Image (cartoon, rainbow, N blue to C red; front, side):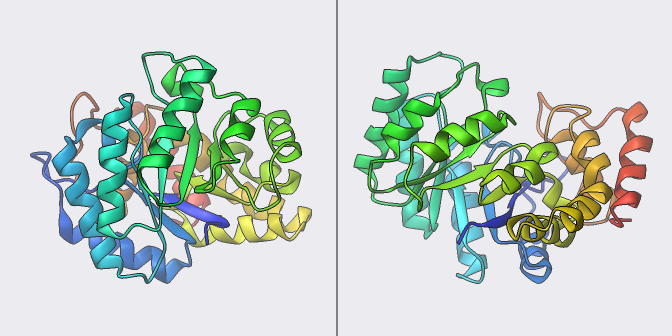
Length: 291
């Protein structure tokens, strides 16, 4: 269900910061048409950190209702409070999500045992497929492979989004988890290598801008077609870099607005993309045939 290219969807907003439902629904239709494997709603790229719990749940409900099982939906439901993570995960289940993505608790720096008990508590409280999400560059918290291996034994923890970009991490997780444990890349720049090494897919920011091309690259890499996947990834390589010139999702929202797909809205403390970065991002979009 989640193999290949999965998009970390933005949350379109109006200038006043309110959610623009029309643009949100158009993005869902577009990703279905472009062949994206699944939609991840209300993750980091969806500005989950700036929406309150009620808004978070409302967006999840709208996405699930509009998608209407035409494409799998993975809901971002992580939090640095275990009780909040449980509440958001329950909301996602009630909304009809197919799975949940739970980032490691950020800022409070739990121990590896704390990470294990946190994710075990959420998995025990809400019977829905769950993915772990390790992104230490954002959270100041690194879930080690041995902790992932422990959590993989819990029946409804079905995979992990590993965003360190380190192939040795992938190799260690593969060696210590069952064959049906799904390991997804959370780093666009290294996704091709990740898939050729044994990963099953990507949760991608780049897929917001070039969904069909990203899916083609993932499928070629999954098939072991090194030359084909390299040729496609070359077209995407500048996007992988320029979409992170400022904090995600600042660049990707500017790019989607430039493409005419969403309004300009973004919530503070995030700001619109600075002018010096606009030209290189536009050039990267042209290289990927997104403009």
